[in-house]
Structure formats: structure tokens, C-alpha cells
Amino acid sequence: MGETVKYLLPEEKLPRFWYNIAADLPEPLPPVLHPATGKPIGPSDLAPLFPMALIAQEVSTEREIEIPEPVREILRLWRPSPLFRARRLEKALGTLARIYYKYEGVSPGGSHKPNTAVAQAFYNKQEGVKRLVTETGAGQWGTSLALSGAFLGLGVDVYMVKVSYNQKPYRRAIMETFGARCVASPSTETEAGRRMLAQDPNCTGSLGLAISEAVEVASQRDDTKYALGSVLNHVLLHQTVIGLEAMAQFEMADDYPDVVIGCAGGGSNFAGAAFPFLGEQLRGGRKVRIVAVEPAACPTITRGRYAYDFGDTAHLTPLMKMLTLGSTFMPAGIHAGGLRYHGMAPLVSHIARLGHIEGRNYHQNTCFEAGVQFARCEGIIPAPETTHAIRAAIDEALACKEEGAARSIFFNFSGHGHFDMQAYSDYLGGKLVDQEHDERLLQKAFAELPQVEG
Image 1 (tube, helix red, strand yellow):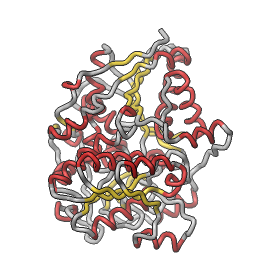
Image 2 (image 1 turned 180 degrees about the horizontal axis):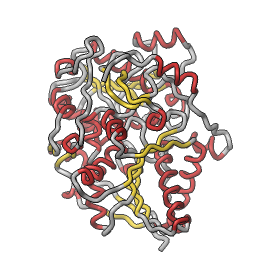
Image 3 (image 1 turned 30 degrees about the horizontal axis):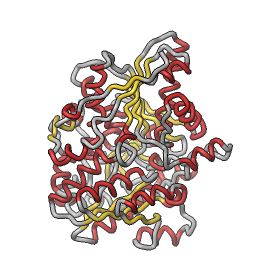
Image 4 (image 1 turned 120 degrees about the horizontal axis):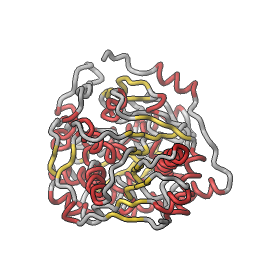
């Protein structure tokens, strides 16, 4: 009863196609708008930043998009990733619930992020790009793109949010080991960074600001493209290998989730796990409850407005319809750096507006409490971001205990926390502070949202 159970798919079961939920939406996604004209953008507007293959995926409504064999060859280094049933955790909780988790920490980058990093690097390499530039919060995305650049022979520059740059020095070391250059954001290298430092020399940065720096650099160099680790449709598409594999693994377990849970910052790991199950439901299949979990310090789904907004702080990106706290909102410096983004992926936001997912937020102490409990039962230390999903899964299991119910709970274990141990030291030492979002700053950011109809 107390032993963890692992469900492993053979390598030949690695999905051959990504799943595109745009094909099954009951209402189409609102268009992305050009900030100057207010009109829908075209491929030429995105060409300075992305290769045409990714632009095509961004606007595709095909249900299945083939995964190139060179990408699958690299993914086979760690995929299919295992699905575990956490029987030891179930026993510790005294619940009738069945708790499953998909362990994405087996990747060389330690998280789900290489699923899209490899694909993006491949398509850029095909188009003759020499260098990729990006941002990173906690460092998992920067690590993954650095890894993919090493695999495919591309240079990589990473603008890392300064609070995480200082909190997580070993993440920087990993990126540099893989050959990338890592810069604290805001930096003096870009106009966006210099402008922010002039306003606030002690600015700890944000993902929105780091995106501004990366986009600025990419737009100025002909041999360089921009790569994004979350938010955009093609990024969420690449992550669906997680949920597609999980569906096959649940067949092996002769089970099916009643609840699907993922932590949500920009939306990629959450969508990767949830969209295949939601797509099955939208096509008339089995119903599931889907829960997106975020930090109380950056509550995009639970407090955000559904509006057109910029994806970055310096307003260099197109306007996307999404749940947003406002592009000028600067979240508190919590340890879950990957969840400190002001907006939610347009696809996730659209689906939330249609009522297909639930939002939930937690403070970081209760999340780390859940992370420590999980580690002591299951033997894996979760990333700070992942602890949010674990907190929700434990709460769902405890609800089952109270009700005497035996529901099946599935959450995406988006990454391990082996390079986030300062966060655990702070928690165990009683130094971790629960930080609310600043309501005054939130209302100010709302007031600064672009005035766009639609």
C-alpha cells in the first residue's frame, strides 16, 4: 500500500504529433493586434522575432501537428517521462484519493521546459538563425534553451530576472556550462533596461521587463531570433507531449483523472498537462475538473482582467487578449520566479473565460509546507513553482478524505528543486515571508491597460 508505483511508456510510444486545442475551441481565440494600428497582425509582423514554421504553428487550427523526427530524437533522451502514483503520500494523508504525478524533472534541464526549447531551436536552426535571445524567471527556461542551443549549435543569450539571478546562482552556472551568456535584468545593455534602472536603481526585475530586453535585442540583429518559454500558442502546443503521454499511462493504470492540476505562471506546463484531457472533454469525452494554481503575490487568473495587453513591460510586443495584471505590474520577489508573470497565456485565458478551468492561489509558505511533505513521502524535492500544484493536489486529497470519496487526482510535477535550495533553507529557517500583491500597484497597472475595444 505504501509503495510508489511508476508507469513507464516505451520509447516508441513517444507522441508523433502535438495536440492543438485551437481545433476544438467552442469559440475562436481573439486575434493578436498590432499596437500601432489596432488591427490583427500578420506573419510579416512576427517575422523579425520568430521563424516562419513557428509563426504557422501560432495561428494553426489543425488538431494535430507532426513533431519533426530530429526533435523526437532529442526528446527520446528523457521522454516519455514517468507517471507515478504517490501511494506513500496517499497513506500519509489517510485519503481514499488516488494521487498521480507526471515527473518532468527527468529532463536534462530538470523541468518541462526542454519540450519546447528543443523544438524552437530546431525550427530556428532550419531557417539559418545563428543566435537565440530570451528571458528567464527562475532559470528553468534559460537552462533549457541553453541546453538546446548546445544540442543544435546555436548561440544563446539569456536575460534573467535579477531577483532570481541573485537567488539562484547555480542556475546561472548551468546556463553558462551549456554555453549561454546570462545577464541580470534589468541590465544596462538595452534601452528598456537602462530606462527602468533610471526610474528605480534597485529594481529586482520581472519577466515582463526581461522579455522587453530580449525582444529589443532580437529585433536589432538579423542573425538573431527571440525564443519564449511560455504564453504563446506554439509553446503550449509543444508541451502537450506531457498530457498525451499521461493519457496513455492512465490507460496502463486502468484509471482516469477526475481532477487535473498544474501550477500556472505563463501557462505552458499547465496547458501541456491539461489540454489533451480538456480536448477529449470538448469532443464529447470524459469530463474532468481542471485547476490552475498560482501565487497570491501574482494572481493573474484569480485577480487579472481579461483585456488586451502587452506581453512585456516596455511595450515592444503585439497586444494579446489575456487575463492580465497589467504589463507595468511588478510582482513581489517570491521564490517561485517562474510564476511572476503579469499575464496568462491567451489560450489559457480564453478557456478560463469560457468556464472550463478553475483558478486558485496560495501564499508561498503553505506551498513549501506541501513541497516538504511531498519530498519526505516521495523522495523528490519539487521546484518552488511545482509546490503550488502539490498544495492543490494535497488539498483535493484531504477534501476526498472528509467526503469519504475516492477521486483520481493528477498533477504535473513541472520540475525538481535541486537548484532552489536557498528557498527551502529560508522556509525551514522560518525566514520565508508570505507576500500579497500590492493592491495599489495593481489598480495603477489596471488603469494603464491599453484602451482597445474587443
